[in-house]
Length: 112
Length: 114
Image (cartoon, rainbow over all chains, first blue to last red; front, side, top):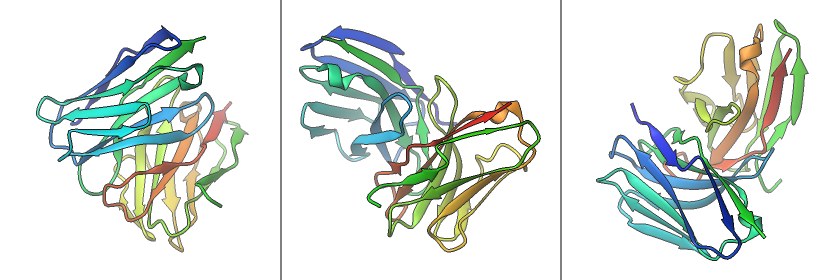
């Protein structure tokens, strides 16, 4: 059974720092991996999707990497801003169809 | 609308009552998903529709939970004889074909069972 773990559970950094969020999964046979952002009391916003054949994806200040064989992904946030404060969720897609399996998330706080 | 919408945004009910939660996906999206999120946890899969049919309902916790999507667009999640443990945020998502693309989530319905 696929399990997704995110470390750390919470992270507090001063504004301007670069930071890395970690995601690991137990079964390397994934179809793709998605990173989401969730603001308090809100739904999920998709940030990046990496196909299993890809090594990384970039969007603005965000860069996500995928090492499928070792069951790991990282989300790198450059020059963090207070507006980046949110919970970041990692999710894997086990097959070409169907549901995502989520980690518990990392709660990020960026202090001005 | 431009995104996935869910109604109601909040629902308070008493133990034993019946509730219906509605999801309106992005127009043209054939795949629709229901997830449940408890406090401090990631979303957990409940059911996945491909068009009008439930392609995978393996995440439904028991037979008190049921979902329909009769015309391949709007979906309703139905919970009978609600229990306090059903309290959670129920999230709906949709994707274009269901073939591993980005899933777009609605804002969720907060269900509180007293």
